[in-house]
Image 1 (cartoon, rainbow, N blue to C red):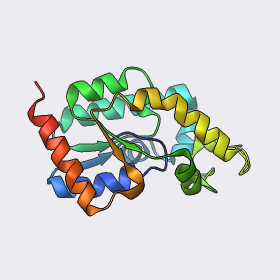
Image 2: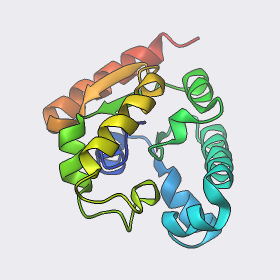
Image 3: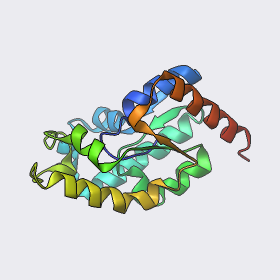
Image 4: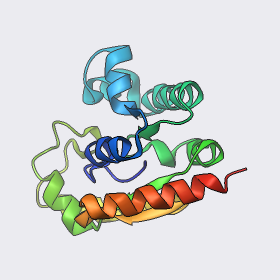
Length: 172
């Protein structure tokens, strides 16, 4: 599961995994568990490049060890190295899509939890998110399935489950 920060990958992923009867893993949770500290602390400690390497290793290890699991990734995971190609080769990728205005509402006041938002003022946040989302969109759009995350209720999650299962059935 991929998408911009704050879109709901972790919460929707947990719900979807329960519906599908598969294990759920979150790369951010694994990073915190394996390396200690929060995501902002790991980002500060290792820098963005080092953090992305740690994230990639966690993603690859999870996908290899748990091929039938639903894995929620950090917002930038799909945009670095060949992570999206790896995810598509090893599973079905779902992009949770949400507009910049809704994301701005969700991320307002969260700069202490989101390293990429550090130093972005409340006034500059809408423009920052719109620009950053547009840059990442090229990667997110490579997903097998795109889902409107603004209204992801139980009925829509069932539809997503059906789409994933249909896509998985035709995977080589």
